[in-house]
Length: 213
Ligand SMILES: C[S@@+](CC[C@H](N)C(=O)[O-])C[C@H]1O[C@@H](n2cnc3c(N)ncnc32)[C@H](O)[C@@H]1O
Image (cartoon, rainbow, N blue to C red; front, top):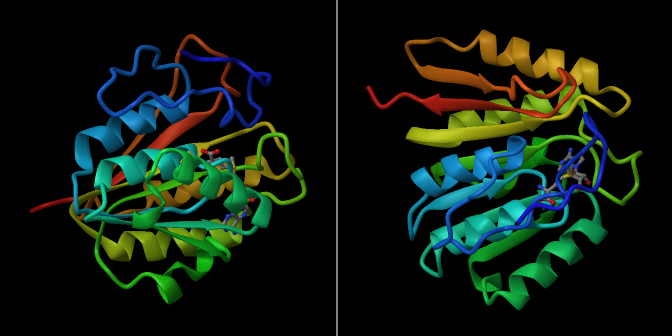
């Protein structure tokens, strides 16, 4: 079930209610459900994964369910409020033990994670319902994307939900698109997925896969 909470082009991370892992995702509306479809295809029990922007914890929770107690999730956010919300979700679902919550910018990913990763998720923008001043920014996002790519296993995926509504979003969007376009096609498959029947300002997904060749 999906509940719309914000306008087109704004941060939409709060609109999507996480299905249990056994459910089908019924409504592929927006970047987040689509990113979950890819995660559910790719991430297996025991895997190592990263949520680079915990926010309210929806992506972290899905990752924690997918990797199970034998796996490991590192979840990053600058805001204690976001980490607290994420911790609450994880506790409620009995998934906290497989998650390290890190209060640090994702540009510092390499200081905390040295293991190879099956998936890394970025959900850009600001915390829905939170401080719009704490927002992802192109310079740090690009550092984090590059570190994440280095850590990815062959076949692993990096997913970026890109938003266009907030201040600075256009610069960040341009930076992410230029970054993705510049990746060597011999080493990476890079995709964008947009909903054609929504306004061009609607959030969309960028996916980069490290090729297994
Ligand atoms: C759109 S929200 C993420 C939504 C989240 N994935 C969810 O499921 O609710 C973006 C989050 O990125 C965080 N953030 C901003 N800059 C960051 C940075 N440099 N490193 C890590 N997190 C950052 C914000 O605090 C905010 O919580």
